[in-house]
Image (spheres, rainbow, N blue to C red):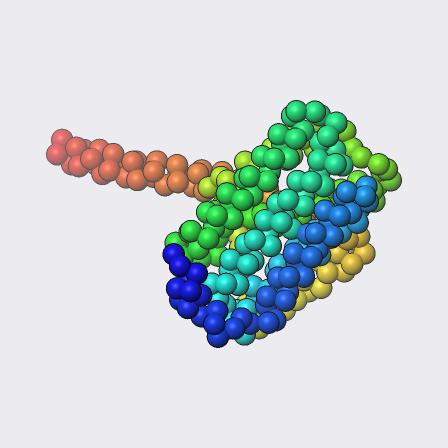
Length: 267
């Protein structure tokens, strides 16, 4: 495809929207800051940079939808920023913080996380109009990055220092990589409209959770993201059990009907 045809087809000659792309640039900067902090050995600052990137990434799409400034350019730019901030930065961070101690298995885990994140983003862009509304196919890469960052923040909050050499970190990265390219469905929360009326108890719950998050951010971010990651596989298990029960119920109905008809004929 010629460059001029691509520019004209996407409307770039008319310019781009500043606000959503500026927020995306902020997310990209947060990822670069995380990489730079990891390089200098400041792992806690690197984790904070990833969390900041996740917040900005959640804002840019919402701002674009609210202001009706969603464009193909913005979607592509957001994907590239996500790959850096939530793919390269977390992989580099967790390798420097923990995985380098495991030798070959360590750098393989870091690279597997990165490539699975890239594949997850590519699949999302292809399936963006075919996936069930309110659902994600596979673990979103910002969620995986949030888990990596929150794990490191919790480590330092609990008094840790330097890096970690725990085997659970290595296992967690392999699990995150698998979940990103899996077909396990996760909630996207895009159907939660903040400007709609909600029950009063919903407000109380949100206020309570906000207070907990403000009081113990390192702990609560880790708890929230862990619960979200577990919700996907658990939801698949519950759905599987329900389908099996429905199949058993459908199989028992014809059998009972045939048995009752046989009894009537014998009479």
